[in-house]
Image 1 (cartoon, rainbow, N blue to C red):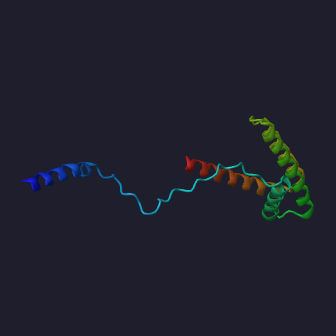
Image 2 (cartoon, rainbow, N blue to C red):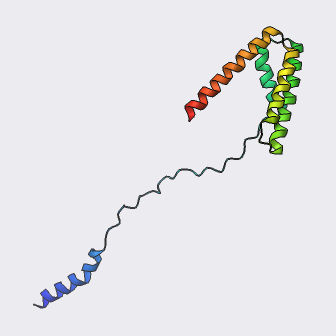
Amino acid sequence: MKKLIAAIAIMLAVAPAFAQTAPTAPAPAAPAKQAPVKPAKAPKALPAPEQRAAQYADELKTKLNLTDDQYKKVLAVNTECIRRKDALKASGQKDGNGKKEIAAYRKQQYQTILTPDQQAKLKALNAQRHDKDAKDNGENK
C-alpha cells in the first residue's frame, strides 16, 4: 500500500507539468526570413538641364532629320525651357500658367527653326506620344 500511495503522490506532483499547453507553432530552427527593410526613397535627382535637353534634341535630330544648325538652335531652346520648368518646380508653383507659357515659347521658337515638313512630323510625334500617355494612364487606373 505504501508503494501505491508513493506512486500516486509522484503522479500528482508531475501532473501539472503535463497540464501545460504546448506552443501553437514550433520554434523554427533558424530565424524566419523577413522582407528586407527598404530605406525611404529619396527624391530622384534629375540629370542636369543640359543633359535632358540634349537627349530630347538628339531624339528630334534623328526623327526630324535636323541639320547641325537646326540641332544647335533646338538644343538651346530645349535647355532654356527645361531650366524654366525646373525654376517653376523649385518655386512650388502648381498652376499650369507657367507651363503653358513655356510650351507656347517652345512652339513659337520651333516654328522659326523647323521647316513646314519637320513641323508636321513633330506634330505627329507629339500626337502619338499624347495618345500613348493617355493609353498608359487609362490602363494604370
